[in-house]
Length: 245
Image 1 (tube, rainbow, N blue to C red):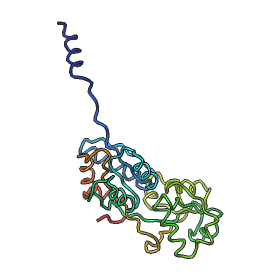
Image 2: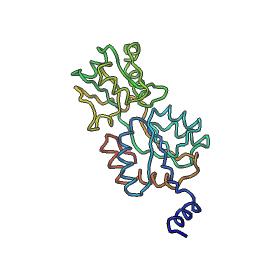
Image 3: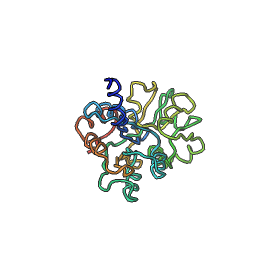
């Protein structure tokens, strides 16, 4: 038999070569750029391909509840991972805090961010019902007795990335964003940044959880081990997050 025909026959009998599906990770918007760095390092060390989707924690949670086939969820709070665990959609005991977020008030043009909060036509914050950073911003405004003054001038965004877009474009005079977004080399240039006191808002404890949509994927377990390694914690810290352990 001709050699070429033999090779074709062997290939046919062996069936098609199918590449392994990537590990699917749902990532809170504030952590998206940081996770890109982590995913590159993780893939270099393990050879595991990672595919991430970013969005507000609330929207990603809704997608998971409705059957989105993610393997891992990196939320911006602890509440949704706990709910997924309680409902059987996450592996029991897999939750851990991978980062602690920091909320800041940022403006493109103002000299004083707190003054701009009172003077600006529009104040941008993420939707408190779906985005933990938006909830933290509302907590601060209410605790500081600013909510009544500001509430009629709020421009709600889907997530903190969109908040930064609103403020950077000038459509909002000031916005409540994640400090981590300002550490990016691609971050817009601002005129003032003010860190919101963490005791004035709900904790931004960001938790990860293994999902059960595809069983307990060994690759996901390896990702979790990596996220708790010194190398990953160093990357997370350099991106503007507090201690995770």
